[in-house]
Image (cartoon, rainbow, N blue to C red):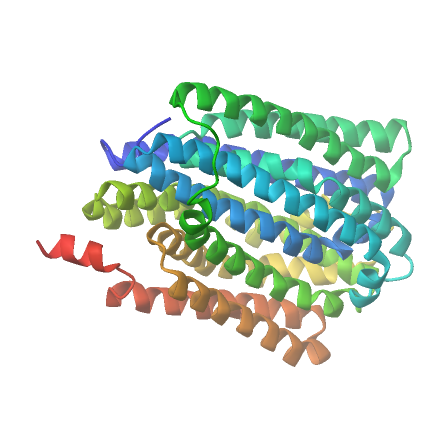
Length: 447
């Protein structure tokens, strides 16, 4: 465990961020390689089946991601304040709460998957594969939940190397499993989904062992109790969950527009989204330190260091993102060709290549948004966090529906890019106005 508020911040942030970024890169790398294997060996229809429900799956996952991120920030505050017993109980309560919710939600989604596919307007040509993949993935929510929470909780305690090892293990198992299931066992999309399930199971077990070691290191006595947990954690977890959910509701709401264009458009969007996710993983894992750092500063009263941390994180995140973004903008055809085979419809290239060249550069605005969100979560600024995300989501959905009729999938891309820009303008205005600062911070800075 590590206190992020002490010492040279540039050194501390880099030391924390590098393993976190590598873990994120590995996580997205195996997602990219999964799609490459599917696209090259199973075909464009299977690639589209993988992406047909991705928006809705991300919405479901966001409930757990958001709650887990918020609880992680709460854990970071308890760690900064030295409240070890509350810290241990908060970790246990979070694991228990999310596991129960995951079981209930998994059952409901499996029972209702056919109506959901109707709502998403999944192309009949890929519906069977999309249903198979969807049901296997949602059945493993409990297991995936432990893997996600492991990252957030260990990061909150200043531990970034262990999640890196877990990402490496997950990547190796997932990629090996996919190659075996697709090239040897001929298990198709089912084999791909089962590989993800196996990798998540192994990592979840490792995190459980890690939690037990953390509890031993804390060395606190007292029985487990959830007294005070809801009051303490909910102010961090629920806003974070709603904010993440809001973002992915917007993505899920435009999924019918994408799927209505046929499997060629769905496959192109899947590739575009993979590259966005990869770049986003770079700056999201770089800015992850900011939320935990801010929360630890709040817990210890070290408010004066927060602004310094903001600018360090902004420089660090931008430098990390630029090389891959440059490759996507300059060589979009080559980047897209990794996912497509000789039978891929020309429409898939026609949709995917322009996204990388013209729309993806706007992701730099979203880097600013992500840093702003991390700051707001750390200081528990619920209203500004929700308002910021609401602005981006409204612009995304409104523009997508307004222009999709005339521009097709490019209307969705336009909505995406403009939403990033609109939210970034809001973030810059609020930051320089100083209205984001909590009263305690404002008072401390005036002394």
